[in-house]
Image (cartoon, rainbow, N blue to C red; front, side, top):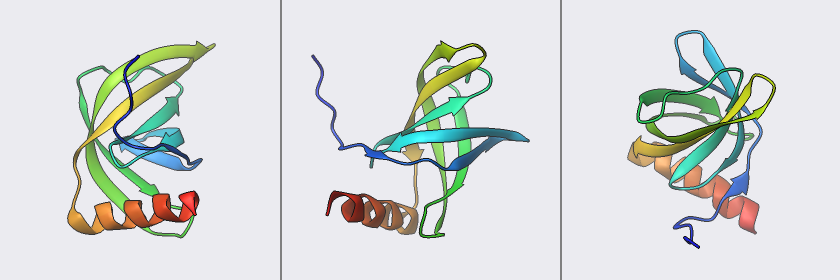
Length: 102
């Protein structure tokens, strides 16, 4: 069994990932985010992700779809690896995860 490199924390927020495309987050880690969307996200494709943390901090980064699977009806779950994330965005994400672990 493959161990995860980063601890995941629950996160339920709306995520914009393409022109007029939205998903819901399931969980997040320093390495990526799990999203639920109405349609499939293309594996290997890069997306610009924009979302707000519960604190109101806006995060924007580029992520790569590592996997996508159908979970219910038309809903799909996708694992997105953070590919390009700025230092300030990384710091906000770290603060959120640290707060959830406390």
